[in-house]
Length: 118
Length: 112
Image (cartoon, rainbow over all chains, first blue to last red):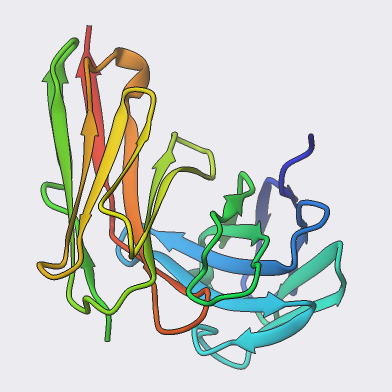
């Protein structure tokens, strides 16, 4: 049973370059989340989708960040242009939200993309 | 704004000890609370999810309790093992949606 799949696992690139992170959620899950984790700030939600529609992008730090979910099995997080302060581990997570509210089902995380911007 | 706090940031115990990890949150109007485990270089693994109507959940040697009125949750680990060494994070939804606010985690080291 495949979990959340993220690629690449590691990315090292120079400042100013475009970076694209990819995520394949668990089949059947209808919610997808992008998080960023740093030592200083911990784990922060960037954006989340429900049924492929962005619901809350208030955590996206600035216009350099964008996320898309063209279908239920794929999402991308893009940074353009990248800056050294974007260096972090980026996680994708998915869950099955069944009625109700408040994230009533556990979120399943991928292993993350470790991004280093030089 | 919901804030989640986990203290201490790190904990080291000898193998076999029973231990309690604490989590506190500022806004008690939560729908549920989740405990996660994170191993180095890995993503988060959901351990337990407690709905707001529940007071505790158990899974094997793990027991999580929730006291909404006081804004606290505890994760109890019985008979700790070196394999329990990891970072443990708690998280609560922010408002009536799936957006989670995380604590910064407690890094647990269980010494053989």
